[in-house]
Amino acid sequence: MQVQDIMTQNVITVAPNATVEQATQLMVNHHISALPVIDEKGAILGIVSEGDLMRRVEGASDQKKSWWLHLFADKVDSAADFIALKGRFVRDVMTSQVVTVTPEMAVGEVARLLAEKHIKRAPVVKNDRLVGIVSRANLLHALAVIPQQKVNAQASDLEKREIILSTLAKVPELNINHLNVVVEGDQVDVWGVASSKEEERAIKVALENISGLGQVSYNLGRLPGYAWGI
Image (cartoon, rainbow, N blue to C red; front, side, top):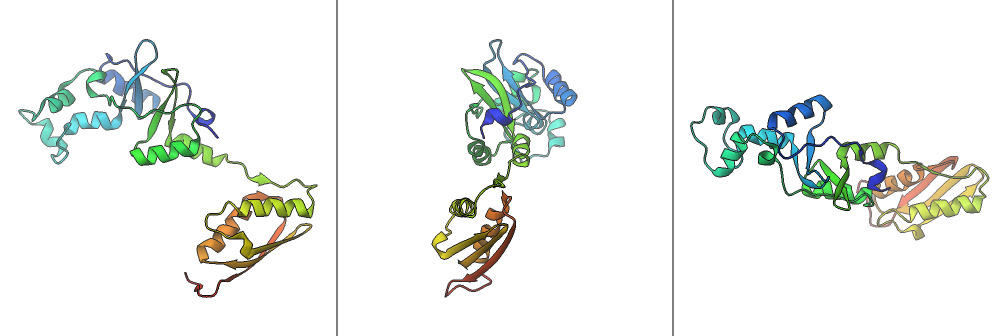
């Protein structure tokens, strides 16, 4: 699955010369928490978020001060503070260094990127133009529609067994040579050993993601030297 399959295409944007009040009203009206900032050609210049606006209240550089002290402060400590507190336009408060993704990027790669960068969303750019935005909410929606692998009702016992073994082979650190799978019609028996409680559960999870197998019975023990509670 790629970004273009889950991204929001009709993106609410704002111009850099829009006022902070206008940007805030756009967020409120459309129930969104961030606005990509674009120029007249659709190129992305930055992004303004609730966090940027909160820093306007709290101060740009000194996060230790209480926000209400800033409201009553007679002076600010730096030029950055002054811009954050007094700037009237989006260009004054937006984040300029924006992490962007492409429509063809894999959804899993985007999930890792958002986690690594500690961000909630990323604009989607193609040919230097904004074409969408992908957020954590989009990723959650993608998880909700991930289809189960299905076994054809006409599949032979051998075909079912091959599907099961190929699925189990994707479980990290699992040695499928320690397992034997017996398929007879709608009955599947999994025999063998698992090295841990988690590995045993992973085997079950893998098969639970295959629909149409019928009744699955697990007959799993432990390798010598492994305790049941490990």
